[in-house]
Length: 138
Length: 153
Image 1 (cartoon, chains in turn green, yellow):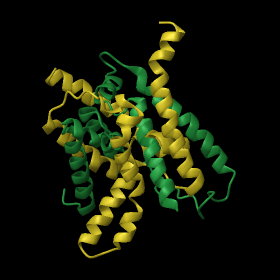
Image 2 (cartoon, chains in turn orange, green):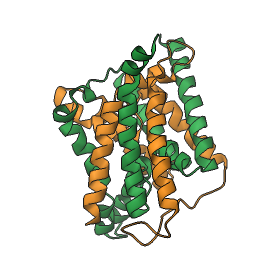
Image 3 (tube, helix red, strand yellow):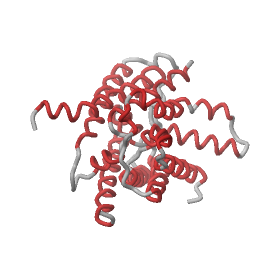
Image 4 (cartoon, chains in turn yellow, orange):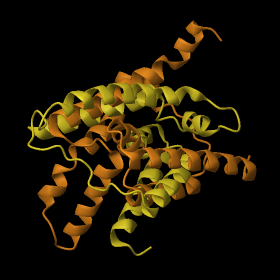
């Protein structure tokens, strides 16, 4: 049963990303263009998402376990180390360069039907980067 | 700019954000799982890599997939739900996009998250790591846009 829930969350997130404008590289780059024609619109995506998610986390915090599982799977890493900084820095450069973060990249794959190869190239690169991290050859 | 203009300009980002936050909140409240796209996709890539070497079980890899399938399928359903959702404008070349993809893939695995995992879920847990990560990728993202304009225009 859990896969239906996970699938529905992925689907809902996809529509949220589309409605919000996160799937439009020009809006992402406009948001990051603080020294130029800054477009603050995407700050409202984060504000809306955080408001709802913080509220739901507060509800969850009153419970010992999730409604349909045994434990909250809280990320285990807590230290602020060079990996966190260097990795996030590299991610930010890629985000600013291509205008896609992982979610919108996957959602935008469908633009292939309109003849756009950008998202496919992005996702292929992203998987290659993850694969390289896994095998640690670079 | 008056309040009506502001509302007109920011209602879609706000509505989309609320949907994203709700999806993340539901997964946490019901299953205690973080809706972090790079983490979920990265774990899937890890498991596929293990399976290709004869380690692990394909069924474990498949269990990681529903969120990814939902995201990709959501894109294909976008024209029926929100027709503007795929009308993005891209000014980068395919080579730049490929480099961007590699940086995003490697960087999110090294840094343990992306805009969703750190930016939406981690900050909602008030995680210091996620706040530091989010500030970091926003700064380097802004720098990338700035430097690219200096070099390419």
